[in-house]
Image 1 (tube, helix red, strand yellow):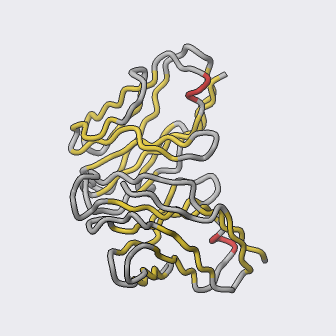
Image 2 (tube, chains in turn purple, green):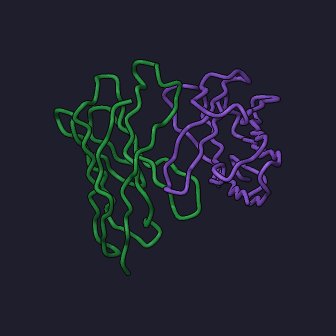
Length: 113
Length: 114
């Protein structure tokens, strides 16, 4: 069983569309994250939730809205997609928001055309 | 989080040891040194971490300088599967201000030759 799973793995969509990426972890962890890796391969944190509560919200456009229906799920919804949103989005989780190993999913490749 | 400096790329031959250096001269007392790696087309994965003492696990060893201003990740026998980008990351685990987040730098691209 995949510990941190994301869907879809690949997504090609047009500018202006709204899309969601779903993430689920079966590790029983309290904390989940979204990271973005841009075309230059630079990995940057976007959001973090601990027990369904937002604890990290880096400087991200309001078009990006995370939603955590329960602590095993953290979905990323993106409104009005722009070309610059093309990237790989990684979901991750850790036992709690502190001194812990972070486990990453395999990534969701988003291409906006 | 304090900044780290790593070489952009390194090369190794299969079955040989690899020493990946990392400089972190501005490390604070509560910063732990973490190493993650990212295999091609995959998410990052944990390799090892430490605070002051050298650490060993099944994947690698971490040698930490006495003044903690540098560290070295050691892969004892490189395999083709070890070809990846290796990230050295400082995280304030002791001070509790990081909320667990990892701040990635550019990392070192390791190429392993057969």
